[in-house]
Image 1 (cartoon, rainbow, N blue to C red):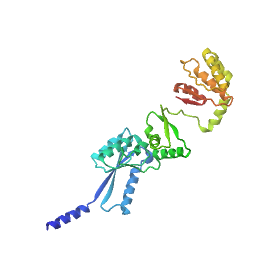
Image 2 (tube, helix red, strand yellow):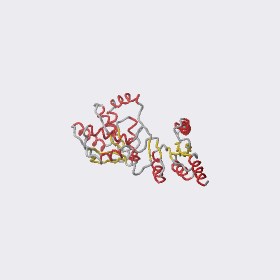
Image 3 (cartoon, rainbow, N blue to C red):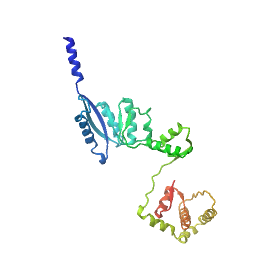
Image 4 (cartoon, helix red, strand yellow):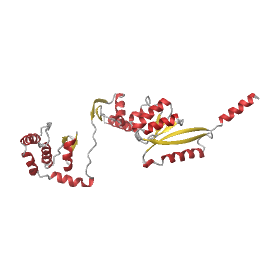
Length: 299
């Protein structure tokens, strides 16, 4: 009789329904506002098609993410209060890095459905992280590395920003080069990132280009003639350009001393001859030069 009772108990336990709670971390993005409903439709479809075992069901619990690290807070809530056994999302790199580290500590899987930083491919740091993104920074790095080997480029230099470079394919590219004898990194150059200035619309580019090639250097010269230092520097730079000698000039002067006008005149003089003129300037000076569509790289 006791054996029969134990057998009946084990049978009832084996057929008891098990619920897998999916912690869905949804970004505050109207484009994917219906993502939670889609996940529920998928869960129901798995049950109807008998893909899931009869005693297994999925419960989707959706909470906010990607807003002042709300996803990290909600991920902890889902783990400790809702007993979530798997995570889907979030849709931003800064949060998935943190949550993936927590998922490793909790020993639960997390599925990234958007492309994140290539540092996430490190399975030593993120062993429970998977991805269903169509593209990734790791694949871009692998494609770049294949391109380098195809053309037998054995020595390269890496130029990367000082912050957030682990979100790009540079991290994986550096690791691939370290593990390969075919490509060697000679230098890694870090630059301080700045947002690109707003450019004019493509439709007006030809008009601006023609106008830039026909600037009145005589009118611009009046600005320079009011400053002896600027006039002397102008002649020195233009003579160097006309001789085809490569030199680097640093113009460092206080405001209202003509350096902006000097750069304008240099650009205009060379562009009127159909030459390419390149100006390196600070962001403050860039603001004064950009309205006339000079070719400019702000530093």
